[in-house]
Length: 283
Image 1 (cartoon, rainbow, N blue to C red):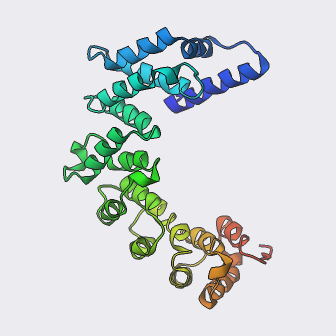
Image 2 (cartoon, rainbow, N blue to C red; image 1 turned 90 degrees about the vertical axis):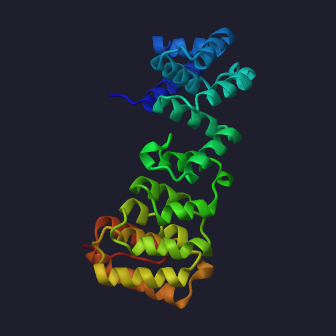
Image 3 (cartoon, rainbow, N blue to C red; image 1 turned 180 degrees about the vertical axis):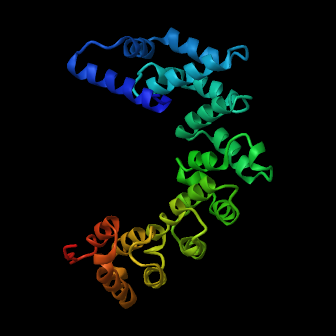
């Protein structure tokens, strides 16, 4: 089954390619292009969003179409104010998917109302199941604008995440600095944490605390070996340390990584090859 995002991408690609080559469009793409050029049709779609009597399926269809044409329509920007007001009205929709799409669209526009709403949801002490938008989605939406996410809020979520997806998003959006390095290193070495979160850590902390990260990477590789799932990410983190941060401990750990290359997975060997002046032995 084709997802909504895949469908959007397919239609947009067809429209763009047809513009370049003057090729005929299939009916769906032609319909989208006609809407993109029509003030009246765009206004009708926005009106569907503002009418509480509009069925959910029609609201989602309108949101989908408006999302597609936002990439290229020269008419839609003339109705931006009406569209934003309509989207804001859907923030409190009883339908979860309508809420998600409306908040996503507003977040891409850097809308302050949507950002305030998402921050309030993240700060709420309601159980995750009772929140109007899942924590991981709220973080990702606010993450579109780096300034919209508060570091202390992300740290709190990372320390006590409601689920694995939320931990991953919190780690993904935490800034690389001395305030976050300690917690991130704890997550890196905690084997009970999801690999998707742990794998993000090396390239966040490697240039904040090169020595500390190198020491941790060396210990983990010596304990678990080059075949462990985390090993390639440790090697990539070492490869990403800037030359001006290559203190002795970093160089020593890189040497350990090189010595383990023959015993590692293909992913580990590929990561090791990114270390400067590394020639891998044949397996």
